[in-house]
Length: 439
Ligand code: SF4
Image (cartoon, rainbow, N blue to C red):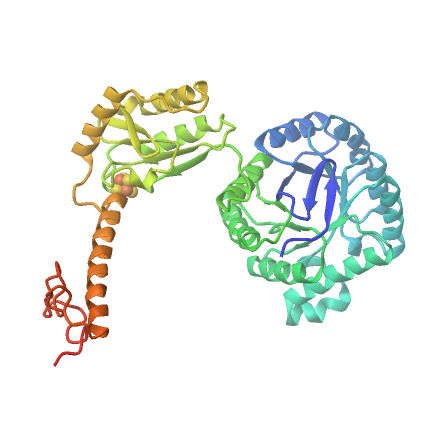
């Protein structure tokens, strides 16, 4: 369940029903101000709400003052092993400090950090990693790794509560997707504090994105998780942010920028859809509005499948068509499809989000569509028409059946065994001999 408590990392609310916050972490040497600030601006532009920087040395803690002052988004200082660096990070104005109390040098040192965090109103992210659980949980870790992880997290929470500190969020990091899901489900039932989700060391852009989508997506779909970080082995931290957004957008938890829908292509494809999709994706990133754009590889199924899309294109060998909300707008040579699509989108925005339709061009496009779509394909429109016809038949059959059960005999002289308009062919019926009991 969603966390009950809320904290604030700078102006960003975490937990207590706030939108799920997107985090990432810089990959630069923190003290290299130019490189670090460049990456922070890049991830902020990509949509990061919060960014974390590693603080392993004195000079990194020193650099924090400038980074905090210049960053467009809140900064979390990531500290391990050295409580002095945590104190310096708080002094430097970090909006939040991440530390694992288990590796910071004992309860006294944790208490020292908490005392300063309380004075400065600095929130903490506290947590545990599956790879470094306390010694007394080693046997439990062997017998039940999920229970061990949750127990360690709860012990950390209890330490915070004993120190009378509640301005924190909690994370449990595991490289295992099933354990990430199971442990966060369990912990969310046991504590009211916000949860930070991530699959640690998830992997490359490809495998890491998939693991994170499965692990984090499963939890987020259950309403668990208040902030997420996608860990990918790439220097480009903005890639982590883009993946995080795709997960949130897929679950309709947050909206940002356009949505691209594209068919998977098949043997009916007659144009270079790979490059068209890549070009559409590249160009539609410039739009901040959550506009939906669809690309279909052919017109075989009509355009009904993309009827919800704000705009879309479908192509054949030489010609293609632009449509909006399932209605044709115009037909254009395939080579100009992408340019013309974006012209239509720009006209739509220029007209205050009104689709601009030229009836003659639309009629021409409709004719092209009729010539190119497959008359035998099951379009949504055709499926709907078949369902309506079937429903009508069902209604007349049940009226006859009702009259028989009421003992009223045939309705208006209709044979009860063969309802009006339905030719009953027992030989081909899948329920032959079982449809009615006959005398
Ligand atoms: S839209 Fe056309 S090309 Fe794309 S998957 Fe469907 S049938 Fe194949």
